[in-house]
Length: 266
Image 1: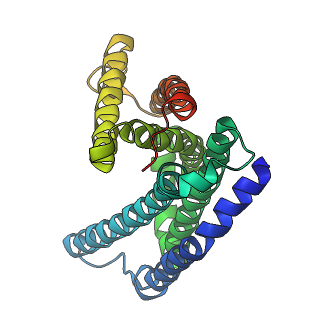
Image 2: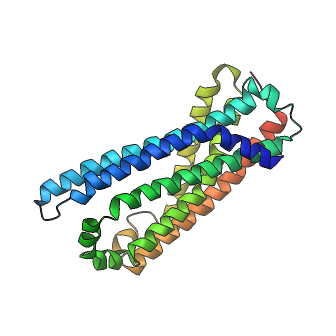
């Protein structure tokens, strides 16, 4: 039954999800052919930097919008299926609360993982043009020395970390919605408030741990170079992963309890 729940969620989300990501890839292709492949790295430095900053800013806005749309799609399906009028039908199915929750977690993770993968593919489309790769080859040695490893390997580490964090993001979204539905008069507002409060608490906890362990910028960060820089970043990734995992477990337990004992349908 769990597989059927996941399949139903993915099928319901597929149309909009595929359309948005197809548009994103199309924009990346157009950006590659009409901008990146036409870049002249011998042009005046100020003009080149200004142009790249503007393009990068527009790209970041596009990526942020795409990620937000995916998160909203996942959140709305969770809320509508389990806490709105649709919930009366969902909870009559021969499915336990745990199966409902895990069905949503797994389907949400699949969507966000695909979202991250497509975003990475779009970025590769933009930066793998001949003129860009030739220009980068002139500074690749310096970049690899500063990072302590090739930029491709660094990108792979960041990509894998992003895939892992998707799981934590999904659980956090569901946690906020589950807590928000405890307040019938202001469900959405409370869910949003819980989201920002949770994020703030996590940031404060991360900062405190970084200070206690000596990882906060201003300690060894500014002296780090080469292998030391890589070691520093890997330690930060590890610290973030452990903290996210602990928070995810707590949020999952709370969400599971609410769905088992505190369901409040409209």
